[in-house]
Length: 547
RNA sequence: GGGCUAUUAGCUCAGUUGGAUAGAGUGCUUGCCUCCGGAGCAAGAGGUCGCAGGUUCGAAUCCUGCAUAGCCCA
Image 1: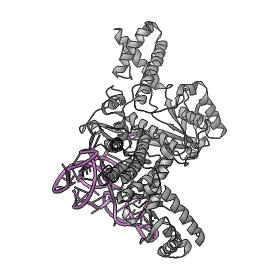
Image 2: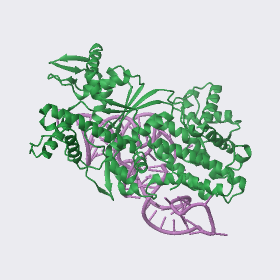
Image 3: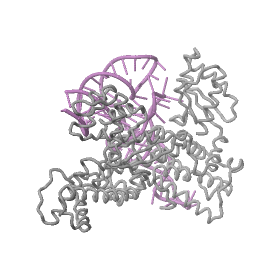
């Protein structure tokens, strides 16, 4: 980040001197191949037309203007018009000071500038325990929350409880059915019901608490079952999420939305803005004006409101709570719903206010063999089972090491392994290794150096430089992950950081070096451990002192 | 039937707004311990970026068609 800021400033000044505009699409970043230098800029190519010169000639002019910068050691021009910069070692060494000064705040930025963001995720119907697929959404949402906060956004995490629809009636009916079975009444099997064993457990508990249950009228009994079941299941969901270190600030009830008349309010708003109308005894959303192929029903002629209607009202409510940006995390099977929801937000006067992240399927495997999952049939691997078996850290890292919108193979045996097959151990081991070194150093009476020109000058090997350059990039990765809403960038950075650390460890011995050098290296490794811990923290993964 | 998303090394996957010689890990081959945790490090081999056109100084990336797979809607 320091390198990027310095270079951008210097380039802007140089371009201003020539009277050339700053190209909007300029890319200033470390080149993919480090043999090209420390930082690379493609501005010359983009200015060629403006300056009426060949890209190479433009690059030569810029190079001349920056020739006297004391922090830049070397400037090279590559064929296509890239300017490649190599910074002086002294510049990189100051990264240590920046990291130690900022402490845990290192990596934060003002990118978000206090923008109010809501991240809504998991939001599974309270009709059964969370399964592995919900776990992926949970890891993503929680990590994104942490990353956005680090990047200067004001974030609220929310769980939307679908407690008003048909699924809840089915839940009530399922519990009642099991209760009657337990009582030996031989009831008729419902058309559609949840078959999991947990339903029977809930029915048994409820009967102990309400011995009068089966004497109640059908509708009332179903209602009692529904409310009781929902509360129990929701409690279980909260426990599972807590064990997975997932945070929700607000638990928002769909039922409260309906009961408070918010749906009708939103209908009125839509009518006022010309985006809603009544016809054929129903109420319609005029989505055709926003590119949909047909208008959508919000309230059917029989008076029932559709899922879409409560979703619009819910998003209306979110915006009225003052969020500048609303991020929804959904299962990828709802992708067809995205344009419609986007259109609805536009109709609510918030174009661009909604961002939907899709989370694809998780294939749960054991030793390469698929484990069958089906919620309705009651046979599935729950999130709890998986977390109990492989641990929260390994599961979260696995979920967050791929971009969300692609299918993920989750092999329990691989995720559990404490080997190179499993990147989370590689990264955590890096942290533990530094801490182990700290303990050894303490025994030997060696302390980390303080930041001063003498101690910094001892960080003079190629591995020191490599390490410092990568540490300097951490804030850039945080910003990139926040902008693109992709936590897996952090995971990839951490793997690279760990790899560089292990290389450093092998090539630059600490305790056997001269005492001053050992102290300087301990100081650098303190920075590395801090950044590893910070990055793992963004993923919600623990940074262990020893393993 | 209409639509969305994917297809990159043997395998699992990165690749930001179009930019340099397309990158990691794993697996395979071969090296490195009188030394801080070898749970490590290093080197090598491995590619028609699904196929065919197009756009331009330049395409894994953008456009069109086709193939295959998954999902959504009717």
